[in-house]
Amino acid sequence: MVTTGEKVTQENQSSNFNLASYLKEKQQLVEEALERSLSISKPEKIYEAMRYSLLAGGKRLRPILCLATCEMMGGGVEMAMPTACALEMIHTMSLIHDDLPAMDNDDYRRGKLTNHKVFGEDIAILAGDGLLAYAFEYVAANTQNVPPQKILDVIARLGRTVGAAGLVGGQVLDLESEGKTDISVDTLTFIHTHKTGALLETSVVSGAILAGASDEDIQRLSKYAQNIGLAFQIVDDILDITATQEELGKTAGKDLQAQKATYPSLWGIEESKKQAQQLVDEAIVELAPYGEGADPLKAIATYIVTRKH
Ligand code: GRG
Image (cartoon, rainbow, N blue to C red; front, side, top):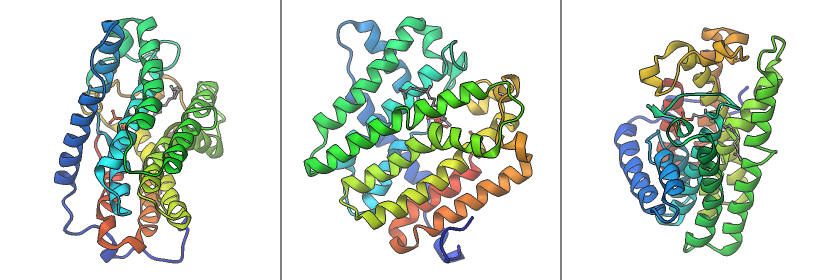
């Protein structure tokens, strides 16, 4: 599955880079920006519901990927922060809707009760809608020092990513596949490249666009992101089996309970781990031209297969 002739060697693995302190620093910046992005107004209930899920923690992987890519391509954190926040708003709204009784029917998310358990189903649906709309407003109204055409490109990509060509399409196929025993690897991969991979890809690519990256760089970074996106989902499937509710912050073992086809159910756990590692190796190959500047993206790729939650 290696997509270029290059090999992953020791020198293009991150060596002295400290991912833990990098993630801590960026997570703090993102938390502060998210806190500032949405204040309580009238009617208070909907803002409280939106803030409840948006500020409930989480790894903030999508905003960090956007910021890291923007910086790697020569841009600054400030120009990418509105998009980084919008990515987290979109991700959070997808979690709120995914947890609803009509979808996955989950009681816990990010270690807390799900939005509908606290605010009711009606408000949870509206909180998701509110966050989705606000994400687009937030990018358009707050992005500075970026040419308007680039901002429009980011907004168009965000739209495509959440719609039927992305998260919504992946979710529909996922719902249709529940309880079926004959799901192929191709169908499973379609579900996850849309449901999970699309937003991770847009996180990376939008950071590159805002920094003014060339089409060639964007293509390379898309490949990096597609590979880590799929690896991320394979690991998610494995963790659903091997991790505890405390580690996950949500109910463990849900896939088996809902009779969902997963990578471990098709390949077994060991082969799934091998495939995830191979995808990450291939992702890292794409970063070869960017030297030390790519250390954060390399380390994040590695973290994706070693993470415990
Ligand atoms: C987007 C309009 C619109 C509707 C939503 C419900 C739905 C359509 C799509 C489902 C998308 C979904 C929930 C995909 C799963 C993605 C995933 C692996 C989530 C877990 O991500 P982490 O581990 O979570 O990054 P944290 O909590 O760390 O942010």
